Length: 250
Image (cartoon, rainbow, N blue to C red; front, side, top):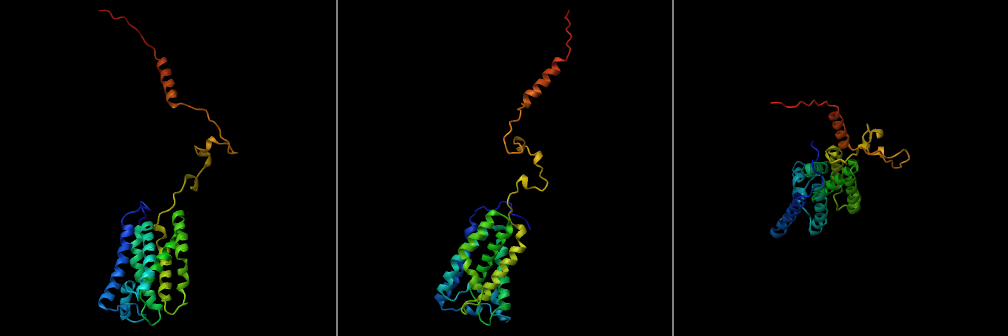
């Protein structure tokens, strides 16, 4: 896997892809309302062959306007963070995250239709949080704390505290995000290492430290002008040359 060549650079893609996905889930909901359809049957129905189709379709389906609205903002924010900080692997996290979290939900879920983009939201939340901790990059670590500050309450909904909520889908998303953070941790941007962080660093050879004594006091070293030194050497060589003058006679 290739590491990011120019990490943390903003482009239109950072907002475009998250916005398109948000618009897509709203479009699906609008079609349901406009034409009186109910797409719930296309959600994940655990441990049935027919229910496997929900692995692909369930993130697009929501039970109502409240459900849709509650997923819209975190989906946009977390996916935007993903595309900004982890652009080279962003699509892999989203696509594989939908598939893996859906399959885990299909394996562990209760016999009911599991719908909504919350499974993907938990993938993004978990991935952004854990990979920042693994990265040893101060910016990504800071992102981890921002994610927890904004959406730390998501952790509690990964447990069966409400029968109306698919905690199985949430748990599946958390597990998937953690797995991806472990798998992709070597592909992310690393903090710049300074020369003194090198294991083979020798402070006695450091040109900067030569200007300080063992107590940290500044030492003024004798100034040597290389240009004048070279000029003196050339002049010395010229002075050692013997010239012989002969009068020109016709």
